Image 1 (cartoon, rainbow, N blue to C red):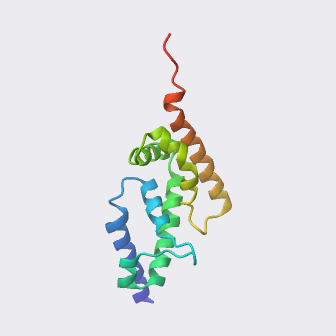
Image 2 (cartoon, rainbow, N blue to C red):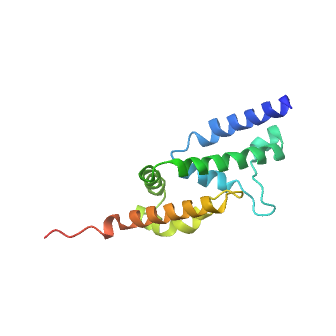
Image 3 (cartoon, rainbow, N blue to C red):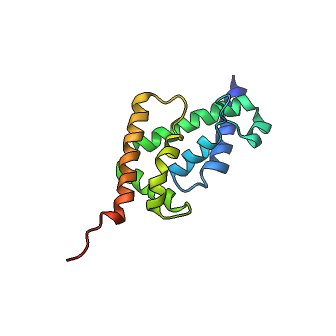
Amino acid sequence: MLDQFQCTQQILFDLTANYLEPLATTYHRLDYLAGLRSELPEKYVHEKLASLYGADAVHQVISQCHQEVFERLLEMPLNAQGEELRVYLSSLPGTIEENAANCLGVCKEWIPLETPNYLKELYCSNLSVLLELLQGDKSKARPSK
C-alpha cells in the first residue's frame, strides 16, 4: 500500500514539475492533459512516465490530475479565467479574436472523462461567455464621434 502511494506521489511530482508547471496557464495545462487521452480505449497515455511507473498507474494519476486542474479552473473568478484564456489564445498562431472564434469545439474536448454534468455545463457556459467577450473586444469598440 505504501509503495503504491509513493509511486503515485512520484508520478504526480514528475508530471507536475516536468510537464505542467512550465506551462503558462490552466488552459495550456488542460490542453496538454486532454492531449494525453487516447481515443480507444479512453485512457491517458504518457510514454515516458509509463516506461518508469507503468501505464495503469500513470493513467490513474493523469486522470485525477486532469480532473483537479479542470475543477481549479472553475474555482477561479471569471475575470481570472478570462485573463488566462486570453493568454492561452494569444500564444496560438493568429489573432486572439480569430482563435476565440475557433476555440469552442476544441476547448470542450478538454473536459475530463468523469466530469459531472453540472460542471460540464458551468465550464461550457463560462467558456462561451469568455470567448464571446474576447471576440467582441475589437468588433464592439465604438467609433469616436
